[in-house]
Length: 439
Image 1 (cartoon, rainbow, N blue to C red):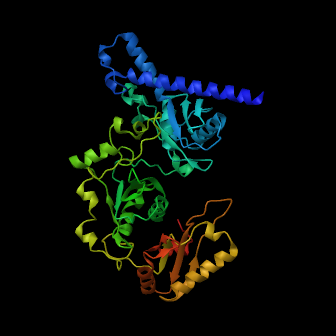
Image 2: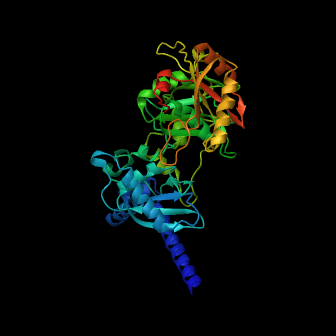
Image 3: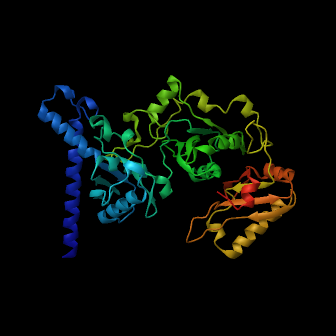
């Protein structure tokens, strides 16, 4: 009957998965000196047949990715279709573009543990799929990793991750949790521990779309450690973001924002130990090495023992003298730049703005509160739209008659608690406000 057929199909799938895991494990044992497993002999000591077996195992592993945190009751066909469509939607421009047709050749699903191995037609596409870490699939944020025996050092140069074109994940709205080293990698310390990951992202996104973001968390509790690393999609906003965010006081903490340049042995050690969030350099520190499908995903470890003192302290002394009277933005010379427009973060949520009557009440409440500091000329609160993405959603923009009024309001509202959320008040470009550019 139907139930027996389903049981047989489940047993077949589980056996298929066990066989796959067994082959992954055996391939790891054959990794030799390349690091894929505990073989006693190096590759140069193997005979040609064994070397060929190593290469075949390495190539097979390089075509697969681990996908965790899958939605309940998802099917192999749904996973296959999702990745095929996503690879096409985010294909890179130029010679690195994804080929026409289906990228996925096989899916091995463990529905009970909500993970699967997804096999692609080429190592390049499997590497590109690693950029999909965090993508939403039926409301779940997917975890992407590599098989336990994956070793890029066993692959030809052209198949190694550094030489494979990246997917254009900005088309998908994905913010990677891997922040690579470079001139535009930023560090932000002094983050209130009460802020959630989404709230920190919202604060940083005031200056532009995030390309990558990593919030350090305690491995045991999952709570924020008060610092993060991030990178913007548009590198040109990096300097203005540093100037605008550095020195802001939120509650009893003060943000310290600057470029992150790992140039000390301690820093290098910290980078190597972390890999995923901290952007380690070599192949073996690639985030693809951080996930073991047989033990789910490896979470962020404690960095307290290896974190350089320079990252635990706040910004340089000249920046630390900033207090809540300093503005949230500055010009190129570091002088304060005032504005008669404020943007308030974490005061409202998208759900608060759906009902018309509730929306009107929110606007009036904000107007009454802000009128205590001066004449409010206008208030703009972008509302959700079912058919399109709305710029500035979740933000409140308040235009005052005079700059000093906005400054007084900012100082008074900064750090207030509203519905268990910490309000963040920042100055906003009046020209952008006039043009209704709320991005």
